[in-house]
Image (cartoon, rainbow, N blue to C red; front, side):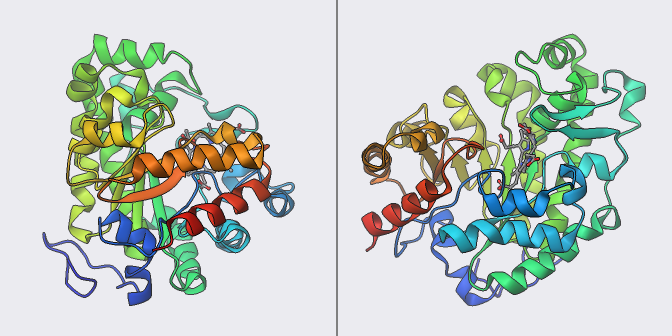
Length: 361
Ligand code: CP3
């Protein structure tokens, strides 16, 4: 679909991106079109690795910082200014829409999202009401400010996928083994399916808000879904993730799907409806392409820990990623997971420069 066509399927329209944004290397790579250079962005590029981030966040709790449009705009722009990345990612967190519908949760520094009263029974489902655009008016406002500032640089909106959100809600916080989550999934499949469906509806509404405000692509983070066997993913998770992707299909913006430890799930994650499949550092991109199959771009996949090594080692490992990506239909360079908080920001800037010069066509 070209930038000027109305999306099919009766979807409300979104502001048409400027042609320069539509023609950016990032969006072209997502659409598997020829690119002037391999585009680069980093998961968690906006955050604690940047001193300018720590400065503006001083004394402001994480979730509160997500609700101030000017602050969100500043933090989102910081890595674009500093590193020259090819896309911005909206500064927020995957639990923001849950907070916005009244779930009692907080993000504890060094821990992650913590839910006061976990969701484990049918009665608990009633606490997951629908999300309206009014619940997240600050998101619409911030994206308006951002698209005005970003010029040709695309903005990526995002949301947590139903499984990963369910894991936080059911466990009550971060979890290594997801035992309560899996107990519910295996022990009460109907309640589990209803919970994931509720989360799919909320997540779809939240992505629509971001796209209608001007986001040029969206990423669905299913960070913890690698904990599942393929058969369980297909049976118990894929229907909800597919529902989210289908809900936003008509807008024509690229949909990226990412998880960690998902080597065995890559094909299914593509099938769920992604245009771009994110790959962690465990599977080389040429092998990932075989698992995902034709018709989808890939995103990834330098081990974020490589950035703690010497500049020569970073270049060597980056070269390996680019070589493995050489035959792909579309490649967006990224890390295999988010930027680690103690990463040297200069190593990220050098990495962007290296990928750009190595892939200039
Ligand atoms: O990528 C970006 O630059 C955009 C910002 C972003 C944040 N969280 C900001 C954040 C994004 C895309 C997320 C998504 C997110 N949040 C995920 C999916 C991505 C992934 O990492 O797999 C998950 C699982 C979460 C949940 C979460 N939020 C965790 C595990 C943590 C870390 C807790 C800690 O302090 O170690 C958070 C907090 C969080 N989200 C921070 C930031 C910048 C750190 C809080 C701070 O700076 O005080």
